[in-house]
Image (cartoon, rainbow, N blue to C red; front, side):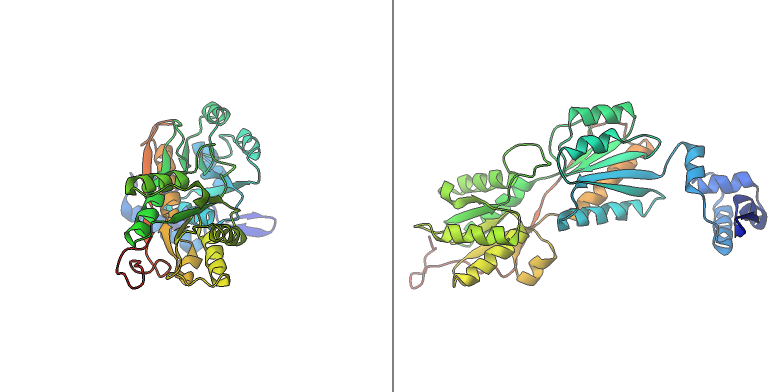
Length: 352
């Protein structure tokens, strides 16, 4: 076996010799050539395991003009949402020999620098998560002839993309609260994502659509935007409960803020769900512990499917730049924080 710096390293020639095949056959197995007989392939894999052979990624990449790596670009990794999306990407790539490199953006302006540094000799493709794709980004990807896919962004771009119907998720929440008898339904939403395309919040849009469809009054004083934090939710509920006619139910744009709403309700002496019904958004891990009814966004599915679309581009099943749009609809998860149908005490009627 070859020696380098005094330490032995198993080479492709060693594998070929022990397996009783030619070096070219081992190379074809490493490159996934389906023409190699199954029995031969299994024998070569067994010898690799026996000898502890580790293929040199760089050499393989140069021989095939592939890096076996994709770049994932997403906002600063501080939210459970992005962690789950990454887990979905990892699940999809585990079935391949492809690894992913991660680039997180602290500010929207960082995106231009991240994309400007992308090169075909460094990665085979790019996954863009929850980002507004600019014409300059598209031009760079085209210049480098790099396939790309987009997840959690509904702008009209000529790339395969996964779109989450956040408006539909909001409508699910509001309709459920209305079915329970609530007529005064408020919204506590988080600020616009600075990384996304500038437009009205899809949750706000769905909230208003649902009220209109249900024939419920749209009260602008019931719409509050607060920081994306537990404290933001607490602050939002305090403001709502100071209104002359406070709401009996609140749809919250994130489970993190909904946690603050539940905390504020307890501080104000409100019993959930008797005095106030609460619906969150996302279904992060803490939601189940809180008994929080919420709208589940299948974060891991989004990441896995986005990665699969990119793999289809890399394999040639999708042409580079081909526009494919797949919509993901959130799901309502009913727990304790809404309760049963609301009725006025002593009347048997539906509450206001």
